[in-house]
Amino acid sequence: MTTTTTTTTNHEQHDVVVVVVPLPAQGHLHASLELSRLLSATYNIPVYYVSTPAHIRQAQTRAVRWDPLTTPNLNFIDFPVSFEVPPPNPDASIKFPSQLVPAFNSSLQLRDPVTNLIKKFASVSRKVVVVHDFLTSYVVQDVPQIPKTECYCLHTVSAFLAFTYVYDAAKPPVPPEAEVVLEKLPSLDGCNSPEILEFAKKQINARVQGGGNIFSTSRVIEGLYLDLLAKMNPSKEFKHWALGPFNPVEIDATTTANRHYSLEWLDKQPANSVIFVSFGSTTSLSEDEINELAFGLEQSQQRFIWVLRDADKGDIFSGEVRERELPEGYEKRVSERGFVMRDWAPQLEILAHPSTGGFMSHCGWNSCMESISMGVPIVAWPMHSDQPRNALFIAEGLKIGILMREWERRNEVVSAETIERVVRTLMASPEGEEMKRNATELKEAVKLSVMEGGVTQKEMESFVAHITR
Ligand SMILES: *[C@@H]1O[C@H](CO)[C@@H](O)[C@H](O)[C@H]1NC(C)=O
Ligand SMILES: *[C@@H]1O[C@H](CO)[C@@H](O)[C@H](O)[C@H]1NC(C)=O
Image 1 (tube, protein in one colour):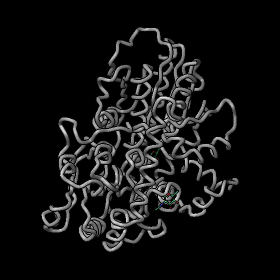
Image 2 (image 1 turned 180 degrees about the horizontal axis):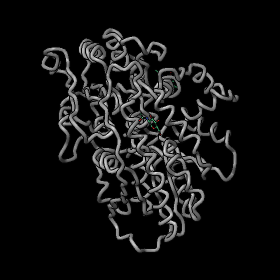
Image 3 (image 1 turned 45 degrees about the vertical axis):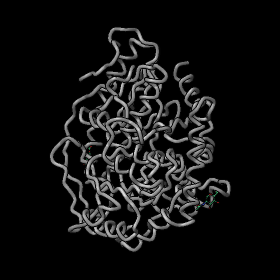
Image 4 (image 1 turned 30 degrees about the vertical axis):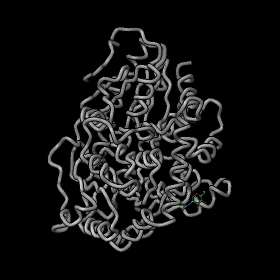
């Protein structure tokens, strides 16, 4: 075990400490780390973020605009585990990143060390608050037996998604504005691989009741679905908090020092003229898909930044990253209006830049929250997991985006013509302008929600008051 602490916490009697147990996958690591930052830096609560060495390093390395190692009260504890690190398969018929499942699986080994750690904290603290991912329920299943502990489940997904599972199972009555969206719900076919379903089943079977749910969303975005979820579990002891967005909502992407080259390029482009194309850390496109996307972007004649990366491996520091090929001469040909980057993109800053007018996204929930926070409308091109349903919510629920294609047609390669048409609709049509207006309105609401007296600020204070009571 290695402990990295920024405060001298050993041998001290604690009041309340928070132990955060993320799933070792980028989106989950990121959301958990941002929540840890809020609790430690803003509310001065000692937070211990616990995972494997590779995944702690991954989360730290990819934190944008802040340094997890110098944040007061934020501590990291790693427990070494070993796991296989297969490469992603861009040609798999299901796009779920199965290469990550051995890393997910390795987290099961954290059960005993994490239980012992929490016992140790409980012996020297008034209270230990455990915030675990829905998909690390297995790791924390022994915690309820330890005195002076409380568990809270962090859902790094949309409340809309969480509610769709309830809706699929029980078809509870919903208001008309939810019904028009829910009646178009895509099926879950093709969203997951058998390996991940097996892993998820282990988590569900080990589920602890706990003191409540934390959602990485905001009431101003998903109040309707948060209320519907709360209605399904009306117990006074079980609470629901929407504490997002976890990302900062005000970023000046035009003036900071040591800027990424993509931001310098954006400085030279007209306002709202660039579409940012990125499918997150878990998507591998096939060669055909890359070619169609390349030509589609070119033919759209819109400005673009395209992040072309292979999907993450279970350990992002192990081995080479495969470079994906583009059509011969492509980058030179498009260099007037766009470029392709291959490294990790400062996504939030790109979205915050005034030249960025659209986002072509896989609709992972963090990406949706970041785009909403920055007022950027979305071309929604979901790939797997929760993404098809998030995409529907973005397009039909929030009306800040357009679908690239229906989920039912996921097995067809999307043609360059379709890509061209959809990109033009978002970036160069009255409909696209309206989506931009809608996205801007939502962004303003989110900004107000995190200010003094705002609804998210109040939820955060209610959560902190509850865990420190
Ligand atoms: C995950 O672990 C289970 C046993 O706990 C095993 O049956 C399964 O094959 C593992 N899956 C992968 C992809 O490593
Ligand atoms: C923008 O939002 C309004 C109000 O919800 C909605 O009526 C309109 O259809 C939206 N525009 C687009 C292009 O989705």
